Length: 160
Image (cartoon, rainbow, N blue to C red; front, side):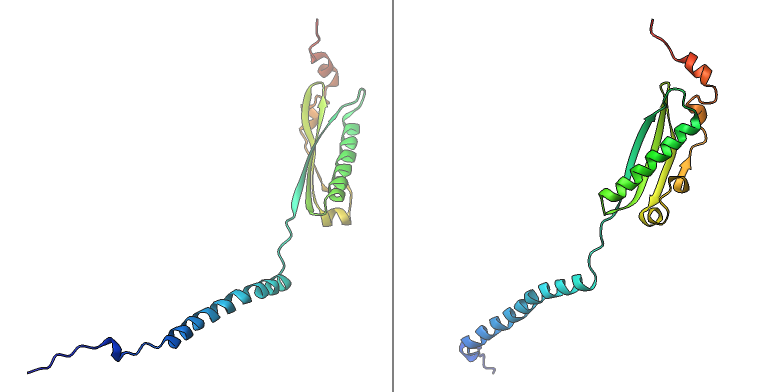
């Protein structure tokens, strides 16, 4: 015959101080984890600071052709305007790393881009010359009717 015996809860003596120690053991790593995050953040910022957010300044300018002005003179005025706009863009904002400028000319109602200036701050610092960094649009002369200025003036509709 076999004897049936049951485990009595009293055989496992509950110790209240053990449960308190277990609770303390769980809290200590949590405090260490929370307490070490802020110094770790300061350390990572000191070693590798965040990247500066730089950007490109974009400027679109339109100039009008003056009476009796030829294409070369308009182009020189466009270069001067591009140079001034690039210098102003770099001077106004220290975060600007690149400048992109498009100069358009209006002549008898026709408007077309004549040059685009794309330059970075180090390039501009080494050589602040619009002619060096500009891209000229070859078709602008014909689009603005500079090839045949007499026909352009006669093709402008007049009000009656």
